[in-house]
Structure formats: structure tokens, C-alpha cells
Image 1 (tube, rainbow, N blue to C red):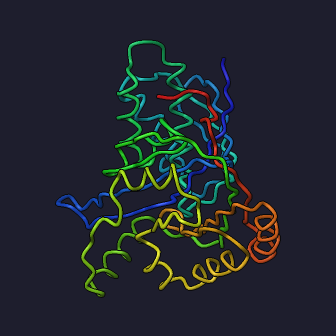
Image 2 (cartoon, helix red, strand yellow):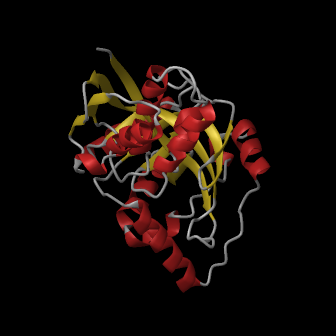
Length: 294
């Protein structure tokens, strides 16, 4: 009987530009994703049958993305055995940090290693995309330009020349609800979407500019700040404490501060931690922690 333990990193969105919904209701995006050193811990063990999950995640087992990953792998013939899964959650849910998608990618990596030959990397990527729009990123890169519905991944050069604070105000924002808020805000304000940056602009800014000159945006920010003013307050606190760049990650509710100066980052951490216990220091990753890239 085999057993694997893997770390599932969080991601942050440094840029997230979202177009209006297409014919099938999906919103195309242009985004800059970055893996960071905040982790869930997943232990995967072989079992004779079924899939048993030990986790403090509030969802029933059948709704858990890990259970759905195992079930879909079984249906496709990618993996035929049972599993026992233990998940230690450290990445907050409903925070825009991709914890569930990262856990899914970790399990896919383990099952890929245990499945033997005959299943291509492309098939594993397609399976991941079916399970969640962020999953392909976690299977492929530590930093990337992500476009389409999240299925187009262009790996980028890793950077490690800044410090990250993640502030989670114990506020759960579901992604579907955030998209409804965005659409109604644009309709009310008469906003017609135009891409703020070309794909090449995003890459050039990431590779060449300092955080204070990034000029990245998050399309969710204005409507989410309007609905949840405390997030706008966190943004102002981080900027006041010396952050070079502050953004809402994904659809929220985690706020991300980028600092060039470590002393300012440490000072801001102490302040934010006193107000919001779920405040985390992090650094950008330069390698996927499971050590396998699909």
C-alpha cells in the first residue's frame, strides 16, 4: 500500500481583466497568476475501494473537488483503485486564492504518477480543466499569463524580488456571486468592457517593471469594494504601511500587498495580523512543490 504527502500552494492574481459573458455565459479573462508559499497539505493513501476524505472542509464528501477528481479519474480509466485522503486546510476558502483547484492539481499529480503509462499529459490537463478553470495553471507553471476560461496557460519567468502579504478578513465570496455582482455593476454604470492591456503588455510589465509601476487591475475590485467596504479599507491600510502594489486576489475576499522593502512588509504584517488573524507572509514560488510539471 502506497502513501504520498504533497503541498498544495495558493495562487494570487496580480492582474485580472474580465470580459463580458459570451454566448454560453462564460467570461473570457486575461490574468497574471502567481503561486505563493501558503499551502494546504494533502496526504494520499491507497485504499481497497471507495474514496474516504478527512478534512475540515465544510462541504459533503461528494461535493468535494477531491472526491470529484477521484470519481472522474475512475470513470475515464485513469486510476482504478480506492483512495484515503487527509487534507489539512491552511488556504482560506472563498478568498480567491485557488485552494480547491490547487488541492485538485496535487491529487492529479499523485494519480498521474501512480497510473502507469498510456495516458498523455494532454489528457490529464483536459481532465483538470473539467474539474476547475484554475486547475490547468496549477498543473503547469508557478507564474503564467492565463487566458480564455483559464485553459490557455503561458508560463512566464519567475520573479522573487518582492515580499507578499495576504490578508483574509474571514469573508467568503463565492465566485458565481462575484460574477453576478460584476455584471450588474457594469450594467448599472453603463460600462462597456475593453481590454486594459494586451497579452504582450502584461508579459512585458511583469518582466521589466517594478511593482510600484505595474498598473495592473482587477475587474472585480470596484464592484466588490462597493459591496464590501472593509476590503477597500484593508487596501488603504496596506498602501499607508508602504505597499508598492495592492490588489484583490481573484474574486476576493483576500487582499494582497506587494512590498519591495522587507521592513515595511514586516511592519504591515504586525499591524494587519492584530486586526485580521488570517494574515499571512508569503514569497513567490520558483518551482511547483510537487516537482512534476504536466
